[in-house]
Amino acid sequence: QVQLVESGGGSVQPGESRSLSCAASGFSFEGFAVSWYRPAPGKERQSGANSMSDGGPTNIADSVKGRFSSSRDNTKKTLTLQMNSLKPEDTAVYYCKAKGRLPGDYGKDYWGKGTLVTVSS
Image (tube, one colour):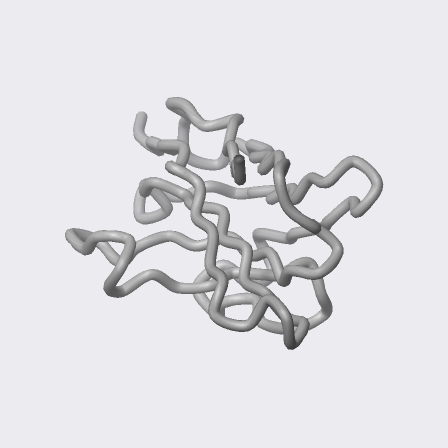
């Protein structure tokens, strides 16, 4: 069974930092591009979700570039999102998505159920 489990969310105050983790199991983590997503305000995951990072040097959204960073550990099969200087507009459910990047896995998209980050005073 394929699983992507996000953790680390919760209620934080503006300016604080928080680290989110995505733990993968049940598939070849190394063969998938894994990224963090958050929907635009009022949008569901399927529409308006923006990729923040797949752990590589690119594809970090402008809205969080410089404050958020992502890294992946293929050995531990985890993806981490380090969130700094959090703002109220960062409030969202953050999703972890894995997308097949090898020919045999094209068309395979796996989503976690998300973890809620609420930034408020």
